[in-house]
Image (cartoon, rainbow, N blue to C red; front, top):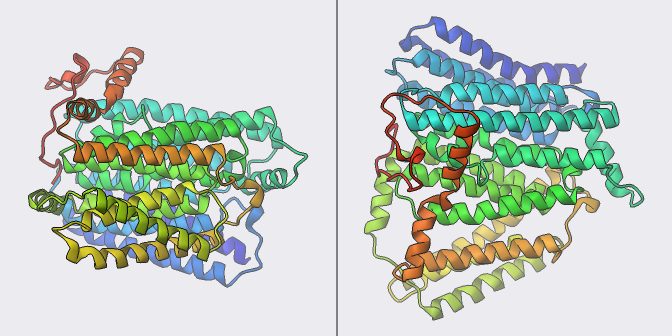
Length: 532
């Protein structure tokens, strides 16, 4: 009985959001905002009640339930509820005088309802239906200003890619059902954990194909290169929609791999597909981001890079770290987009600040300090997993310390050293906490200094070296040429756009005088932030 009641409480959250979207259409603009804010508080109450009931029922067995009560589902639902409260409160004033206010609220609330339904679904068919509805509802938001040609083209590409992802996921579901005769995700994952623990068993060819299709779905959903262009161009949508996309919907690819971790990590082909595509995206997108001027466009490239890193963590078997990354990225990107008006002022301040150019002694000192701290932390926590993530931490701390440890800013060294130590402690602590949330299965772990680990290290070191060249050797002729290519995003989106329009042409708005259809030259960016 407790289990059924918990399921009802969890299911009430997406139902409440759908009802709120319908009721809001009959209200005036002045009434709608306050009423929806109160509805968001009611959703918080529902979530807290469901969590308390779950904690007070430790002996329940939710494996056979259609609605999931697992730790991962509750954490993801909590994130969706948090995002709902923030977006509703922000949109109340931001969209108050928007002529299409009713349309905005209807599709925003339905998108949030679909996301919350997906994260609590333990049934493959319901999971897929919710996944499809998220994309369809989001499309209405991305085309909120249909008269803007850039937004129309981006939404068109997103629409086609979303259908490919949904088809890929649907085929994987059919294959898994034919193989195992169940649509319950928990039952399937329990089976694959058993396979992983039994050395005599391996994935069948059908299961291997399903794992690859799931990995492909995650890569498309997370806007990995060369399928990233739509994510960069939809920044013309209102700021709350950008926040919803970058802080919520795009993270679903990572959630998909975390949910299907026991299957995905046992497929070598799926694992290497993600390592190559997501790892390459992480490096390239991070470099491209450094060449951009527009605040929103920089954030969009940052999202693509962060999604690449999160998927790479999944491919390395670090699913607890990927979940931590997903949550922190969502919170950060929501703040970054909703605060993008102030971000312009902050960016101007950073550009006017005196540049700190470390010399080789600074780099050497920073590298030794960061290496000593990380190695000490690894030994303290008796870490036995892959080393690539710690190499990335060493490189990040090296950059942080070196830029402070120079003749002009030596007084800032002690604060940054303390900050570095706190970052290491926080990282290790949260990684351990999330390790309890996601049960560790030794058979699913990736060995230290394995091929996947070594390739990941090489990717991180390449990113560090190329970033150093672009930032500190920008005057060199070869680096100037590299910067031009990076600013163009390696022209990957231009090629994909041409291919998309050949397969499925679209009639753009009349004022569409854009060069991307007739030239491979990148469009000039404006430093103005759209939608602010």
